[in-house]
Every structure is written in structure tokens, then in C-alpha cells.
Image (cartoon, rainbow over all chains, first blue to last red; front, top):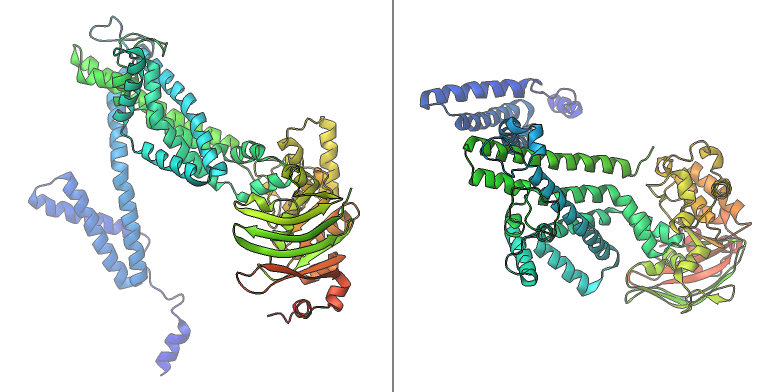
Length: 352
Length: 259
């Protein structure tokens, strides 16, 4: 009887038992040693070692935790290790790609690469100035076309659209999101070939193809952001005698500029690396062409692909250029992301 | 500056749902009129129909007449935007514009309408509106700071300053103190007393002490049951409503014996 009273009044507060803070690390070392030992007998390989270590780690930690800390803590540790494990797993391809592109692309990341085209270049040397210019021009035109259309569509859907037209547009945007990029390229090709004849290859055709891919992304992200703007802000504006269109422009869009900028950047990053639609619409060339309305243009993804798939001699020089073009593409996308961060930092609502 | 509002036989709908039925009342200029009643009885809906904010909600509509100084606010030739410039509104939750500074928030009515204004004019308007909202002394040194950085009570007074900066004739307040602490509430109530010399003020409140403290006339709304429309039960001088109401329901409600 007295025992029962004690345990009832104590509630276990301050007496709960914990594994020491170093326990997960200790278990990890033990698990690694155990797996290494087991695999040393069966023949060592890295993947097997990592998987076995992860499984051993989880089993040992959860069992130990359950014995010492109780089932709630054990579940917590189990889920925590699952989450951390998934995170590390997701990190593997990222680090692998970054490492490969940087280590192989760094060799040709020199001034010549950015100042020379491939016109008249045989063998080593040469650069991708023509491809860089083409990518920037085509992406800029794509952005100029897609962003106004995308943002206005999103404004219509969120602020004005009611009934069947809005539902139809939402449905079509959903369908467009799923269009394979080669289909978008063939659409642009077919469109321009009907007008200009079968040999038409222009930078603007590539832009139109990329627009088909970019517009739904801009619409979707802008729509999400606009829906986040509190309804109270719109009402506050209406109550001051501000017409609806001014409210949309100066309150709703102004409040969500930061989010829209992020969405647009992600959309640019989505299309800047597209290869297939550019191959069929813009083609490829070795010389600089600044005019998107006249003739073929080179772009970084197609440059990389051609250098790799159809290398000129010596092969190593071509392959190096391909990797460097890929690296420049990655740097471009990262630069856009940084730019979006700066823009969103500058325009986001502040409280102090 | 302030105007009289006569409402006759007003029915307010959300789509097919009749939310408020058959309200007729007269709101006197230069006075405070309070709306009281249980939740969901249509006080706020009715208040929002007085400056045509009700129709902002899709499917919402109104039948009947709201006449302000001889002009029907729901006449076919009346622009709701003009109505809202004449009848200002303060909401339940303080809602300063998060991208604007304190001064820009006060000037929002002018700036959002792209009204050109000299710097000195704008400064005067900021100062007079903030003075009018009893906020000037607290914020005069940080007018360029974001309005969202103020405390809840200060934000609400900023919203009142923003509303009076467009120089309306009528000021509607939808439970302006329900998100505020007692000290901020007192500041707003003092402000309402001060503002009533210039404006016609209509306030929705759940707080019967507040209604009895600040208002000259009180309207009691009630609802028969869920899904039924809200109705105006009784409207009279505040003293009469709280001491000697004619309706049994009003007496039950103000004495706390409701339901």
C-alpha cells in the first residue's frame, strides 16, 4: 500500500532515465565497427557497409532506448534517425553531381572559355561564348514572355476568376505542367515551320518552346503566393475607397513581390537547362549569333551535349569543354537563386 | 462632416441564404451607435452593408435601402468605391499594410489612389491623423518604421488614423477592441468619445459594458436559431436599452440571463 502511494505521488518527475548525450555517436561507431567486421569476412563493399551500419545503428539505438528510456523516447529516436538518414540519402546525389561537375569542369573554366566561340577552332582551346550568349538571350526572352502572362493568369485565377472559365484555366495549367519538354519543342517547331517553311531554326522558336514549359510553373507558384496574402489586407484597402485593380496592384502584388520573385527564379532554373526542345527548334552553331530572329543559336545545354556526343579531336579537349559548359550552367542557376534571395530580402514585409 | 443614415427594410443575403432580415433604423450624426447581440446574429454583416463592404464576398447581396443624407447608397448610379471613401471602416483585427511604414500606412488611402500630394501636405495629414487617433506622441520619432512593428493596440489606433486620413463622414468599427488588452481598449474608447464630435460612429461590440460606456444609442440584434436570419429586436437610447428595455429578449441579454 505504501509503495503504491510513493509511486503515485512521485510521478517519476526528475527520476526519468536518459541515455547519455553521446549515446547515438557511440552506437554509430559501434555499428560501423560491427559492419566492417562482418563485411571483412564476406568481402568489403562501400554500399553494403553503409546500409548495414545504418540498420545496425537503428536497431541497437532503439532497443537500448526502449530498455532505458521507455517506448515514447524509443519511437522518437527511431523517427529521428529515419529523418536524418533520409536527409543524408537525399544529399548523396547532390554532392555527387556537384563534385563531378566541379572537378571535371574546373579544368577549362578560364578566360578563353568565356571570350571565344568555336568558330574556326579545331582541336584544343576555343570556348562557349556563343553558347552562353544564346542561353542568356533565349532565357531572357522566355522570361519576358512568360512572367507577365503567368502573373496575370495567376491574378485572374485568384482575384477575379469564378466559375467554369477559371476551372478550365486551372485544368489546362495543370495539363501544361505535365507536358514533356520535347513535346513543347515539337509544338514550337510545328508552329514556326507552318509559317516560315521547313528549314526554320530561330532563337525565338526556342523561347516559345521554353515558354510552354515556364508559364505553368510561374502561374502555379504565383497563385500559391497570392492566396497567402491575408484577405484582411484586401478589405483594409477596399475600406479606404481604393478600387479593386489598384488594390491588386499596390497591395496584393506589392505584399507578395518577394514570393513571386522566388517563384520566377525557380521557373527560370527549371527551363535554363532544357536541352531537347532547344535541339529541335534552335539547332546548333559554332559561331556567335546575337539575333534570336535570324538563324541558329548555340546554347549551353546543347553545347555540352554536342561536345560530349560528337567530340572533335582531340576528344579530351571536347569533353573538357562539355563539363565546363555544365559547370557554367550550374553557376548560372545558383547566381539566379542568390539574386532571388536578395530581391526577396529587399521587398519582403518587415516588422522593425 | 458627419451624416445621418436611414436604413429601411434591409435584407442581407449570402447567396440564397438570408442572413439578416428586415432591418430598419436611423443612425444619428455626431453620435455613437452600438450594435450588440449574440454571435452570428448578423451585427457585423449589417455593419458591412453600411459601406458596401458586404458585396466584396462572392455571392453576397442586399435588398432594401440605405439612405445617407438623401442618397441611396445602393442606387444603381452609386459607385461602391465612392461609398467607402465616405464611410470608413476599422476591422476586428488590426490590419496595417505590412509593406508600409507608419507614415505610409496613414497616407495609404491617398497613396493607393495615386493622389498627388506635396511633401508638406502629406506631413500635415500624417500628423493630424495620428493626433486624431491619439497615437502621434508614441510614434512621432519613428514614422518611417514598419507599421507591423507596433503593439496590437497601437496598430489598431494606426488603422483608425488610416481610416480618418481619407476624411470620411461615417466611421464603422467592427469589434475594434476584441483583440486588445484592457489598457489599449480604454485608449480606443477614449478615442471614440473624442471622434464622435466630428464623425457618425457605428460600433459592433460583444462587450456590453463597452456599449454602455461609449454609445449614445444601442441596437440589439438577435437570431431565432441556427439557419434563421438575424433580426433587429430593439433600438433606443443606450440608457433605455440597459435600464428599461421594452422587449423581454433584450432585457434577458443585457442582464446576462440570455439563453
